[in-house]
Length: 587
Image (cartoon, rainbow, N blue to C red; front, top):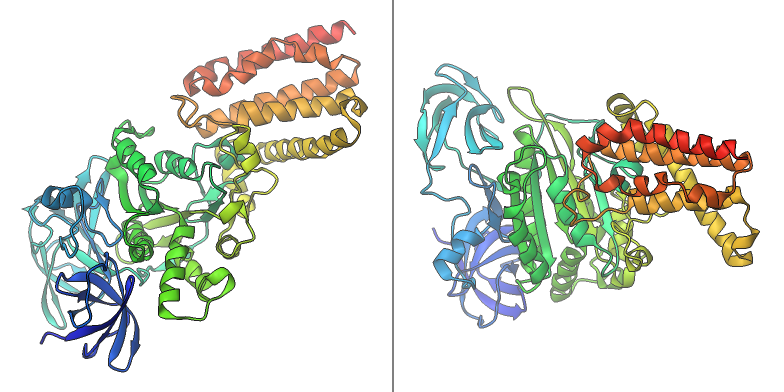
């Protein structure tokens, strides 16, 4: 029986209704004559409060409200990869073909194309016992992604029928006899976005997520299954950094959520991504990417849903055994949506008007990251790494969203307005940023990259910290007060900043730095530092060292391809040693 009520009050995206019998928290309802998508966020007696995910202009009291009986859910199955969805998982590309460039209110369309047929290859046979999470078959969704179709949660029984061939996501491909009778399994699942997907057990982190950005991979590494925040004021490069991570991170699947993002920046993402090539495979990057676009001029309530939609899709691919990187840009705008809706509800505000439950909502989101052993057979591990951008007003890191985020995440990439003004990108402040994964990942770096990696990082950080101390002396008493040894530290620190940490996002070579290339460049700069220190101690004038041809060669290393760098690294070191030896002979 249809459960129908009526609108009694409208306050922006928040609507009150009465008479919807048996309505539950977080149940999806259809609001008004147009059937706008809404979600119940408060129930009081026979009244319920609804946040509407579409523009409410023109709604009138008395219009109907119809309950659907389901929580806000996403569709999971073949057809997710390479597509662009809005915050409530409407497929924007297909929607454009139906309604044009502007989304009409009340338009309802399935997230996954019901007409497209997929080649399903079963991995079970008649007589097998299957349980929840077991892989029952595979679909080659894109050349880069094998979609592993899993038995839904709550299903356990004996396989009685198996199909192989081309089917739509709604077709029954495996029939299972359970205690409740025969159940037909399709390639399509639905899952409530606010409910984390279950797993067998959580695993410790032990492997880094390689980003291709030198300052992150060396000084502040992020683990597979880890959490990171990128706070920074306007113009510090948060969005470009998120784009770089989405393009180059060593994840199998990338989910990019543009949450309240400016339209022109989101348009750039949608335009650029289809043209990008994956550096590992040479295939288009969209063949392993899902984009969720909720730009700033879309209804504000849908911002909250977009975050949960993204993390639920990420968990689904994690359960297949993939490593997923989720980019959320930005959680500040998501928090602003919470603040506006909280104000409409008349809730008692917390700090700076944000709701008192801001910290717990942030924690709920970030805690869905992690590396896990998935449910079902075969045994497989997957991970979700969450990287959230934060946009503190005026670059104030003491505001509530930034402070509460930093209590939860374990990596802090602080973007610095001063570095951005000096055109140093990525503008990550190496003195304010940190990574709590560094010790856990140390064994991996020593084993896979270089046994001396930890010592190299410590030496690099020592030079950068000494530079900051010496700059304070220079400001007080001037550069003439420094010895040649101290000035040499300033020069090497400048080389680390300009020739190593700074990276050009739009340069065809420098946009991505392989770990091996990163190690080679840092190793050569640190060799230069040791030779310089030794030479200065033996009386060589610093200006003579700064005139050496090897300095120009070092500055050009980052724009050389890895293959070329491998070929010249040893000869560069030999050349450096020869040039310094000749200098010391003249003393």
